[in-house]
Image (cartoon, rainbow, N blue to C red):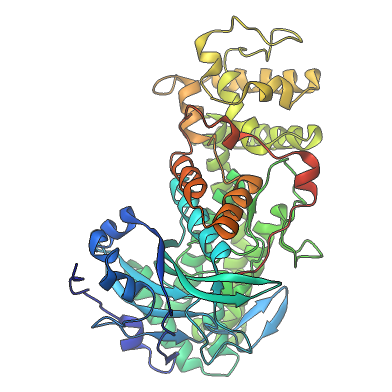
Length: 520
């Protein structure tokens, strides 16, 4: 099937010469389509059937550069684990071009794993099947959870082996993003004293992501504040679902506020602020509980790049930027409280309830940590505890005759709230406070239990389940387990018959030694 013309409109290439190196992808020698995201293709106004054809596969695999595309490797720098690298850039990625989707949004279309570029720094520029499918799965899971994220349009096996710790089947992905502008993009030019280029990048980024802010105040200050607000919202959502990015370097923080680069990331199981799953995060810099602090640190690095543009007077510039940095904790606290209110079923945002609701949420998380409860299932099981059902307030044995609403959560029977939080006095004391707070508000649509299920997922990408489906794909070329898990994760709030295993945590000893790697 012929591939219809693709309407590229490449503003980054057009408006920011000198910010990239034009560079062609390395054609995949024997491409095979592993997975095509039909829903995302429709959003982009692309013909999924044509993309799945031989002509489409040639484009998705880098064999053919379609008319209107302008492939380029972006330049950027970055702080990696606190140390500054003045030149990083797209070492295994290429921006193919930009599309305007069906909602009028500008979207980047980029390759990842398409070969060496001038920024590869000795790397091969390639990727393996496992990490490519992992990024596909994680992006779709985050999207279904309502968290801003890049997404994969297509995963393609290249037919070429890649050497990592062992020889692995090669692959590349086609990533869609609101943009690939990073804090590190600004750092690249600021570190070289190219303040005119920083100013051009500020103007471009504002026009692309915050056109309504143009002309309201110094553009650089407006951009800094908008970026801080987006990051506050994003990190609060990560914290709500127990997501650990694992490598929050400044080159992995986008100005758009999307989650990007699913390398050593994972979802926390047992609630623990110190949880780390990245194989390279030896000091816990990017642990779960550190993420809000690191976001603020990264915002400060962006502010440093913008100082000459905020105000010609250095003292005034520092004062203005510092005000935004110092405001970030309050921005984040407000977003976090909104997330926690939804997850605890607390209605409204009345300021008079702020302190009590915050204290209630903090006490709940402390309870989870103290008793080693699974983060996801504990929140979900609250739906079964609204009326004291499912054994939560009926003594030591779970009530077999509990009301139907008692099992609305779909939480596996071995993980009721009573079992997740076995220390009854502390559990019951908190539940009494929570139910008293719920009694102060009107019933949510469908009742409190239904509202709690709408806010708390039953399914997340459990680390052991992800590894199992990736192993099947890598070792046996069997994508059916991947497809099955993906379908479950695309409906995370809905209890699905026959998928209790996808809600089960891993064994404690398995989680204790679990690691993820920068393998894409």
